[in-house]
Length: 253
Image (cartoon, rainbow, N blue to C red; front, side):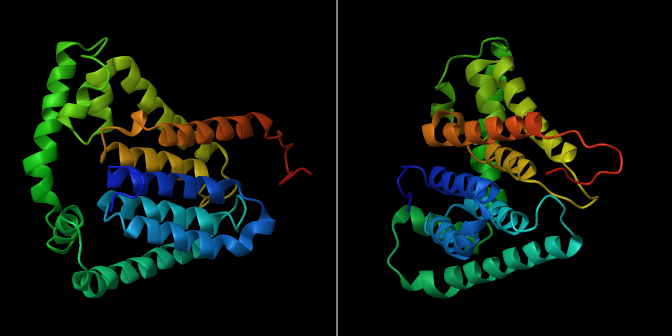
């Protein structure tokens, strides 16, 4: 169930991130493949049994819908995206409750499925992830400027990117990661063309925030670093190249 990584969360996060990037940058002539690409991403994330991956997939759905609308998005478009997310969630629920119990699953996959069906997220967090995150923050306080060493958090497993970066590399890495999320969000705000417009910069920032609270090793996986680099450089570059509109203008060829 881990896909091409040992960690299924990394597999699902990679699929979700590059799905968002695909819809953010794909040209209009490839729009006819949107449903196929979205279905393949959904199938890939589904078989990882990653709880965080299901959450991150909603960003792909929104990116798919928004990429068809241009920079200005109406409330009806947003409602349409929400409807698609709920529809896919229903399909996922049917898969977990009807289809998957009839299959022979690995121990890891069966544990994840049982956690989803039994709604054991809070228990899992309280007994496993929260104590590890508290320990990581305690280690950060011992060496706030430089951290205690790169990859040290891999043994602790806090499942919190902010705590892991602070523990491994100190305050500078933590500030840079948080700044990047805030900067990407601000780029989305800056590019608004209507009060309800939503941009792909927001979706990547939300991906970083959601995955940052569900995994401790996002910064160490080369494909994820590559995806974050593509997103940051492309969105920052598009901001530089955006023309300044004169008063009364809505667009410029």
